[in-house]
Image (cartoon, rainbow, N blue to C red; front, side, top):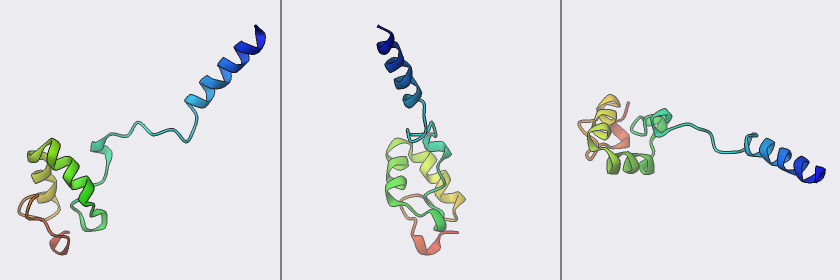
Length: 75
């Protein structure tokens, strides 16, 4: 029975160890409309979930709105 306890302890250590996905949220990610962070997948994900937030982020990066954003005119 003692070996089973050791195995459970080891499992708990690995579950909380490095290499697992971080607890970062979408809001912690860099603005995908900025030139240095340009990311169409990230833009689409935000646009699908919250169009007002997408427009706000696009405007912060120098665009008129999210749908008309182009990498060439990004900050």
